[in-house]
Image (cartoon, rainbow, N blue to C red):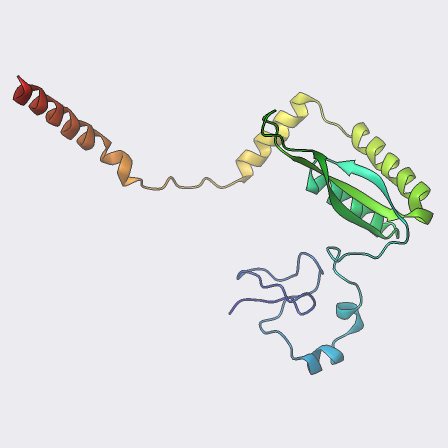
Length: 183
């Protein structure tokens, strides 16, 4: 039986005990609608962060090349009490003649009234991240630690590589026979 989130109704694999989005304990079965009404407010109250937010006079306060960066800023703003949302924007058109591919960026949007506060928080976050940047030695040490903690994955038995010498030998014999027959 697969566990479910009673709030967002996401299904999880065996072994998970808490919803990664809603941070509530998982259940073995989804409750009926009547049961949902009786559920504690802590489970029902907060909407998932992925839900769209209605913004009044939305203004882009941050543009990111990757969705992950934009989600990080959006979530930071939401945690600070600023309603924020994201939208994908075409940054570069595709061109058959030029060979360029279309490129998109992600924009983090806030309401016009929250623009100054949002930009100040974003600047603070950028400065904090720049101050914490690690040098190459520290990055190498962290990568080594992570590699030691990651269990080794057994190599899969690939029979096609085992048959490669046999196939090569058959091809060589066939070529020799064709050469001899053709003479």
